[in-house]
Image 1 (spheres, one colour):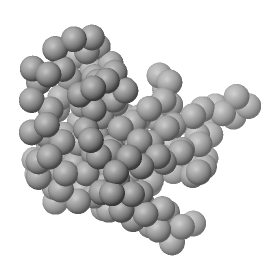
Image 2 (cartoon, rainbow, N blue to C red):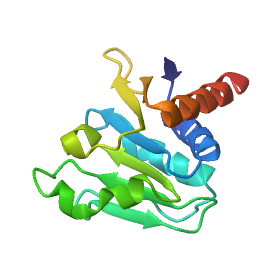
Image 3 (tube, rainbow, N blue to C red):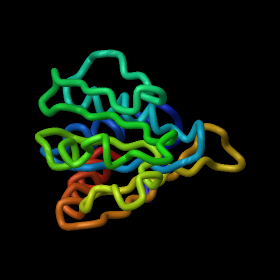
Image 4 (cartoon, rainbow, N blue to C red):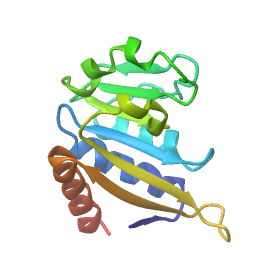
Length: 156
């Protein structure tokens, strides 16, 4: 469990995630609206060396950012009710970049086989506080989780 005290800490964790990412890493971001999923993704982009403005891909579904150390595929699949099989997501999940999937559980059977889920929870008492749980599903995700936790503990 990682505790984030404010949006700067959320972005800092994101930078560490971006720096720790390797090709074909898949990150599923789970959390209520306003939990910090897009803020975290902005930090991930910075960690990959992407200085472009990161916007939530709510209506476009997938935004691609190619100019970093790895490509970043930022997905928001909240509005997908059917047709996920038509999006060619496996090309992203198994490709040369990092896939960050907001609301990933909406994909159901089209989820990547190997992924790290970050669950962002808001605190009832402190509106700036977030708690992050990391759940790995697969060997690559286990390795990704270990790299992130190592970076986080080294910087605390």
